[in-house]
Amino acid sequence: MRTTTGWRAAGPTTLRRTPLERRDPRPDDIAVRVDYCGVCHTDLHALRSYDPHTRTPLVPGHEFTGVVAGIGPEVTAFSVGDRVAVGNIVDSCGACAMCEAGQENFCHAFPTLTYGGTDRQDGSTTLGGYSREYVVRDAFAYPLPSGLDPAATAPLMCAGVTVWEPLRSLGVRPGSRVAVAGLGGLGHLAVKMAVALGATTTVISRTQDKRDDARELGAHDLVASTDARQMARARDSFDVVIDTISAPHDLAPYLRLVAMDGTLSLLGYLGPVTVETTDLLIGRKKLSSAGSGGRRATAEMLRFCADHDITADIEVLPSSQVDTALDRLRRHDVRYRFVLDMSDLD
Image (cartoon, rainbow, N blue to C red):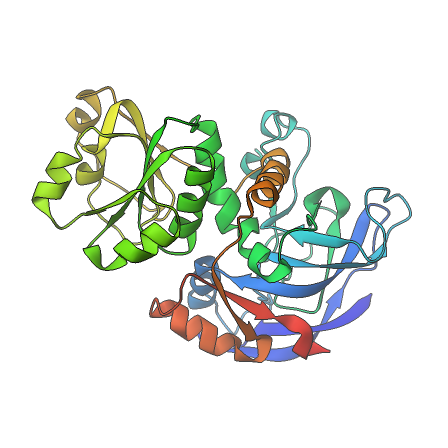
């Protein structure tokens, strides 16, 4: 076993610095020195439901970048010293129809998550990237393009690929009309990517307060969802609406924005929803969702971001301030993503 240091949950709101054990690299593993790890809303949800009395450890973090520190004997794609990125999936069955289609995120046997998952070989619980080292199958690590800043790239490995997946699968291209509801960690990356794909891109926000931010990100317009006249003018306007709003909300106003044969894609809130069938019927509109991405889409997303100089807008904090980052994230006090600098764990 290899020993490293990380931040383990001590309760629903607190993490404690502690030694962690990682497996010795298997033949197809690489050991990654984690340099930067993004802070995701999923981390908040995991901590909120964590029972400190359980024997199962929780180390959050599933979007990180770093440098290869060791390789297994069968690894040929990476060498020690290579820059790499790892996302929220670190293994899958590799044999089901979804895996064969390159959609490991939809693995029928359920993908192995970067933390809180079950290792497919030894049954241990995976411990996440809030640590100085992570050991992962080489197939689920990705070369980090030289032009991308490693800190600002970390959130691409979860938030980035989550919005990339529907933009690509729904065929967004030059001439497409895209709206992005919610301008946070997911939304700001959806705007950047939609604009780079050539789409006329509009932000949907509660007020006009974020108009300047939307413009800086490349958006062509902003519609205030609380302004009935603006929403009425935007009716049937968009081929794709990417909904990144994380709280429960009424989908009807957003479906009314979708053009005939267009799609509303839910990314932010993944709980139960209620839809009037007539809101879909009138205009042959479609309701879909997406989450994460397979290996093929993740690699494609990184190449696209490198070609178009797309990274997340971030605030970097030393990992010792992880509790501060989580507390501020709870209060939506971030523009737009926190990233932890793990070098203080040395």
